[in-house]
Image 1 (cartoon, each protein chain N blue to C red):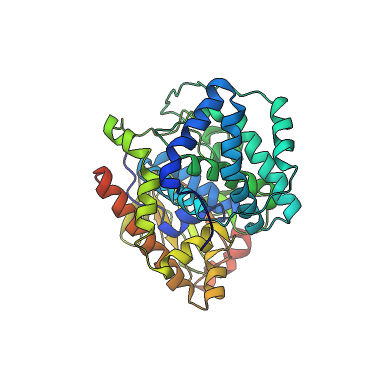
Image 2 (image 1 turned 90 degrees about the vertical axis):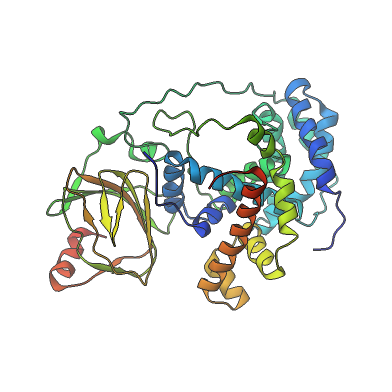
Amino acid sequence: MDHPRRDPRESAHDLSDCIVRIATDQDEAAFDTLFRHFAPRLKSYFTRRGGDPAMAEEITQETMVLLWKNAAQFDPSKASPATWIFTIARNLGIDRLRRAKRPSFDPNDPAFIPDAEEPPDRQFERAEAERRVRDVMDTLSANEKSVLMLSFYENQSHGEIAERLGLPVGTVKSRIRLAFGKLRAALDAQTGAAQ
Amino acid sequence: MTVRHHIGDDLLLSYAAGTLDEASSLLVATHLALCPHCRARAVAADDLGGALFEDLPVAELSPGLRDAVLARLRSESVAAPATRPHRPRSDIVIPEPLRSYLGGDLDTLRWTSVAPRVQQIAIDIANCGPRARMLRFQPGTHVPAHGHAGRELTLVLSGSLCDRDAVLARGDVAETDEHTEHQPYAGPDKDCICLAVTDAPLRFKGMFARMLQPWFGI
């Protein structure tokens, strides 16, 4: 996809800082930076998920307001800004565009099985995960990348993707598995995680 | 307890992408509550979503959008972070989000008998698509041999389920499709309680099982 954008490899750290500044100082200038970076992508995302332009802008607004309200929940050691905002947008999109629920686990539930304590260096590495995912993405074939892009950003089930690409569903699923396997292998290798 | 049978990549990625139906998402989320291994995989899937998000083309915004958002911010304050501590309890069998869908833990559930030694509870899923139900098999009960017209997901919550040479215990997931024919049975020690998600009616083999199907309702 050819379009102008700032290199997120350089700006992810600054964008992280902006979210933290909203949490600590309700900083409107920081919000403005985030708005200029993310709002055009959010509109594009909600349009792909089936919203008309007006609806897509309405949900873009809601996402940006949630980003402001929930800024204190953002933990730069756990997620990149893009990943965090993607998850907010995904959940809002399901609610507003599909009128459905996306059940999720509750880490405070007494029946929840917590993680084993992570060593501090692994926690530090987590913040870099998105950059590493991007590096691996650059090594995937166009076919592998397109099934991932379609499944994340065209609101299509694996069956629909198969129909659109004229492939058996099994082939789509195995491409997705292969591409995701490569990404996980690369992440595990770089974090030294035992899987 | 260590979970040994995990959810597959395509299920995990559809859940991360937000394209998975509600019933299947309920099963995935309940598995994630019990499985730190898959939660790490789910985080990688979200990272993938974030990385792809940066690649989306940039849409043109209406000129007034930025000011409209800024105006809305001034009436909203930044919420304080939630600091509810996690207090684990081993006596609660059914984790969230499933417990809320059922309205309570195991000891509060009202089961309906569907076949000898088998009970179920249909779970209310708002949208059309795959259905979710709780199933309870008395120890040693065989599920009639059946094939599938679509995908069936089973998450074991209590007891054990023996299926095609594997023994599934709490937190384990079995995934079958239209090519699978199997005859799972409950382990011998205690009732086997599962969450099952099916996207098409099961096809039972054998006349007796077919006669039961209308009552079985699955």
